[in-house]
Image 1: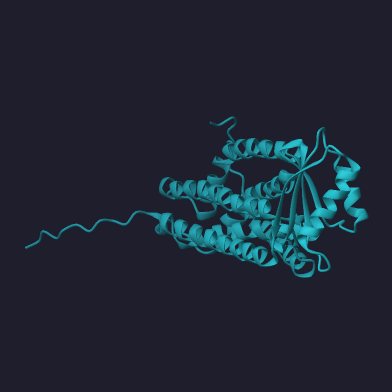
Image 2: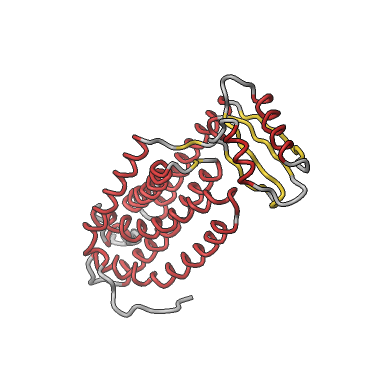
Length: 309
């Protein structure tokens, strides 16, 4: 589907140095934020207690938060879970009190405030489990990145694999950097969002790279920059429509999905914006600078039998 067609190719590659410099600066700032501030890891990774409470009416989350602040548990997380009557509370580990005692103390205070409150479940996440989740999440990111590189190297050639993985890592580091800078809580759902962005962003790169390969075969007299400019321009309509629709869905989760989906949608939003940018203005210039040429993508000629005597 193509809602509009751009008649003249946009010279994206002529801005390659500028856009790559912007990306490099953004990348360095994100690394600095990660280095100096670090991620604000949620209970999923640091360990703690999950308490699910249901009310007879719509839960007053501010009142629950006030109770936690009174008990010096301001770093706890309170959110709706399933419906407006159900509340999920994440309590951090405290050195001077066991998880069971802490959950009982918090629920007693909630019950005293609202008699309709009922305890649905209590789960404990030990620091060792949190550490294992953190290590498993990091391993998952590395495996996905390695899989993407292998796939692109087989489908195209190594220059495209290197460019795509640099662009993808650029997106991931910027998402992590923004979470570190603003100290947004980093949970398992955010990690899931980042893994989703890895696949989403590489799909955009593959669409552009496919068109570049086609153009190398059709535009025999054009230079590499012209071929890439034409490929990006030709996919602009598809890019705008696809990402606009995806972003609409993500914004619905962001505004109406409640606290459980808020940071997940936030990670997706950042990833979508930077995914478009990196696929067009980071991956493509890198492919060009790595020296891709028509000869790299042309099918190999079959050797013919020599019928001379």
